[in-house]
Image (cartoon, rainbow, N blue to C red; front, top):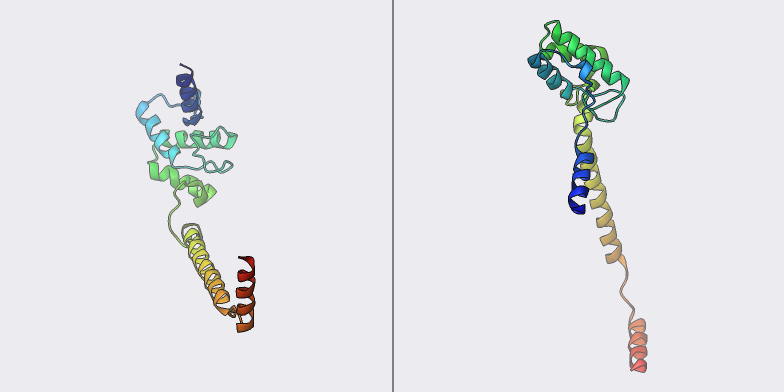
Length: 153
């Protein structure tokens, strides 16, 4: 029973908590569903990578209200997103488009991975060259080691 309670508590902690208040919701279920779909694609600009539906920040609440107002006014989902992009830039989208402004965002991680690969490769090559560059023991040193080994036995 104790394990079941712990599992249920862990599940409750891990489940996403939607920050949409019941007072914010639209009366029409179809419009509310559209607002939720749009809200799931928009980033809270003051939070770390949370959608506006998942954030309880004041700005996220304002964005949710703007989304619902625009949908109620008859805008399409794309028009609502474009309205917010015009105000806040591509950063407001959880999945920003690939364009000249966001190329570093999309290709930056790949660039870092390639750079890390070449740095690691150069490091290991240098280590190998240093190991090869070590000169072998001279005949006198080899004889001294053999003598010490015989004395030990």
